[in-house]
Length: 563
Image (cartoon, rainbow, N blue to C red; front, side):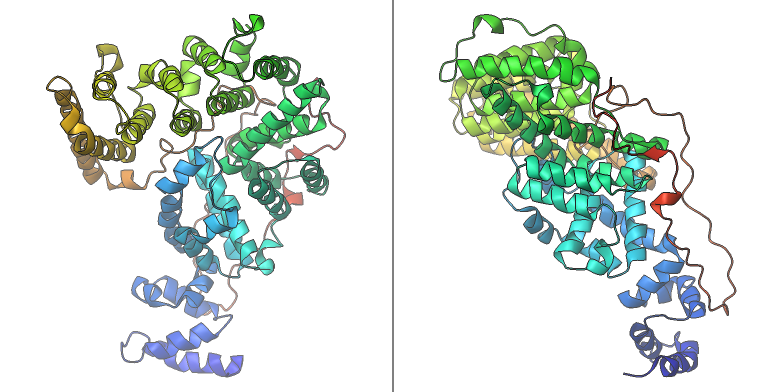
């Protein structure tokens, strides 16, 4: 291979002919062989779209280092494609069912993730730019699928043994440990101590928001919820008190941290949250009492004397604290799986009366209920969950989608009478419950599923019910046509980050930790400066260390639970 001085000399001589099709390959090949293409050539390529597009990836990576906007333009459609992947979203919305694939196998099968990682290559600076962009998109959208992308990109590099990149990411140890917890679906004392040790070595600063994103990945959050429920059952069986269990306390802190990730980035206020005192003092005793009742009548489906009413304190806890809400929803889904119609009916009635807007906005809860009903195939449970609860909210697009999913998978087992009755209820809307959906992707999914039901179950529907389904399909098609016209008139709508079809992480109204400061985030995009084409010194800024960030602290001696 030629020495660098000879390659530069050859590039000097051949670059003026790069505009000639017959000679273009010579300077392109020379630059592909150079680890550091002189800045004047990179700048010229970045300013000439036709030449830029034809550059090898090795050269584009160097161009992106001096022109971040071009890198972002390449990343944006891929990142949208990743977070809108229907298969990923389906997995992210499951509270109880961890994907059958190991995390590494799931990443291995994600072509979009691999393409993003390929763009980054072995450059830590490009990796940092990609991570910063992911954080910015998450900050603006609140879509936790970006947290999944943040963790997946890091762990893909880990899987590929690119230590030159991932070893420089301060959250690698956290991501690796959480990945192991998800792989084993276990957060035991050993893992808790590992995570504690990583926090002890984490420098105060902005990196806390990156750590929070690792735990805000819905795969990680749901793993934590499943494990805190297991620890609660274990504590109840041993006749111990939840607030005295260090594993429960610390896992609850991590769930609390996950719900602070978006707020940290949005408000630029990087402080480790506390567990709100009512979570440990009120919520866990209420849930432990319910677990004890459920264990005491295991094998029967009759309520005990203490199960007649829901504790009055649960209303405020469920409505105001997202940690309590998520754990309670996880327990309800767990009782569906265990065919406990008594407890499920009790708490779904409580939700309908006290907090329907909170629970129905949690896509993971709605989807998990349907998943577990389809899994247990129990007629009584189907009545409690589907007919007595979810059908009340059929006008909500995501609930409608899950009800269609239930009908798709159950219609073959239904008698004709049950099919007629259910379909009639599903597609009959009162004036106060008109079906409204402004999300084009979700509308497309609902339309496709409705047509599938028409094809498979249509012949079994009578002249009274079939028109209801046809009218619903027609209304969806009209809505789809209107949305397509709007997108045609305003093409930018296609590139807006959507949060409708993604797992919801509510935080604005929920009291989970310290109150955020009222701070307006600064603009992270800086305008490109005019650079002399003959200047060989590219403006590559050093990465800012976490010690340079302010407003943040992890105090080792601070209590986890707020006094």
